[in-house]
Amino acid sequence: MFESLLNAFRAPDIRRRILFVLGILLVYRLLAQVPLPGVDRQQLAAFFEKNQAFGILDLFAGGGLSSLSIVGLTMNPYINASIIMQLMQGVIPSLQALSREGEYGRQRLNQYTRYLTVPMAFLQAFGILSALNADGIIVGGFGLGNALSWVQMVTMVAGAVILMWLGELITEKGIGNGISFIIFAGIVSRAPSAAASLLTGGQSLRDVLLFAVLAVVAVGVIIYIQEGQRRIPIQYASRVRGRRMYQGGQTFLPLRVNLAGVIPIIFAVSILQFPAQLALYFSYSTVEGVSNVATAIANFLASTTVQYAVMYFLLTVGFTYFYTAFTFKPDETAEQLRKNGGFIPGIRPGRPTQDYLARVVSRITIAGALFLGTVAVAPVIAGVLDPSLRGVALGGTGLLIVVSVVVETMKQIEAQLMMRNYEGFIR
Picture 1 (cartoon, helix red, strand yellow):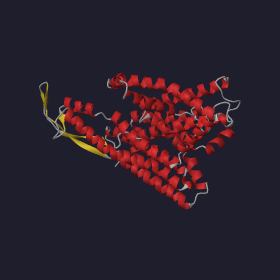
Picture 2 (tube, one colour):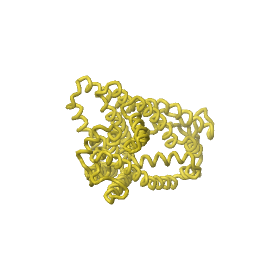
Picture 3 (cartoon, helix red, strand yellow):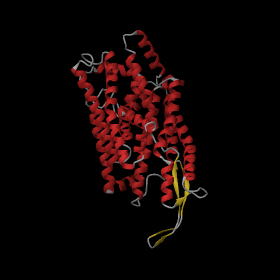
């Protein structure tokens, strides 16, 4: 593995991409250390000790939210905007047509997502600052008539836009998915302090060993899912181009068990935490009825409850199918095979090939979705069964994302190295 890393750094283009990603992540971590003005730090620390919903958001922010840095919103506004845009593509014909226009359509949809990110960031910044103000964390109070409040909101929105831009730079000029990398960097930055708190927090040896076993099992299952694939045989007929005859051959179409990667987990957590944030904001209302209803909703959506685990599982499974539908399009794949003279043995080209591919992807996604959902909620269930392991829920969610991002990045580096006949990472 170390030799392969050296080979990767010997290749100028791969080295440039890796160093570019590391540089962007360094910029992100530096921005996460810049605090927002007008905040009582002691009250802020006490608030996050008792609030599980904001604790999960802080997990993705890499501690940027618990310190209320200028990038405390992290990628959540962009993720929520992406979810909304993908849902709108299924109900708005013009957006659906735009999604089928290749690179031009993809760029236009990305541009719409960027525009939608700004109001989503303002909404989230207003909700977070309002909830923190109710606990006396915002110095001088928070309100739309306060100039400092506007400075705080605009600063947080600007931080979210900067992170969105950095994530897109990683996707375009680096290796891997930029959104996943930004979240990955935030989670990894908390790993040393999380490990220290686990070892020195008074947990018994049994709890520590249980956590280690859960972590090893989660890592193994995620790697198994990411590497699992169904190979569809493809036969190419002999064809004539110009005056040359090209002999047909046989290859295969690899269909991964989990085509969606880590995105379903991120989407599921974002969807679950959005109503919890709103409920927490309204729980400080002076109207008793509104406050009671909001408090009940916030308690119902707490990350240490059984209903949270059930909804987390269902959303993860649902988003796995949802995102797979956008990642793999059977009609386009069948049409591409037909144009290149390829066919699946025993299946006629055209619509029969499209139906066959759709059926195969639907079946193998069942295994990927169930595995991903089970691993996602296993730490949450462990925390419900044993209250002393409630912190494992956060660690389990982070572990899922970290392992998925690492495996996906290694596969992409492996593909780059294979083009240069280097030995790869994955045996």
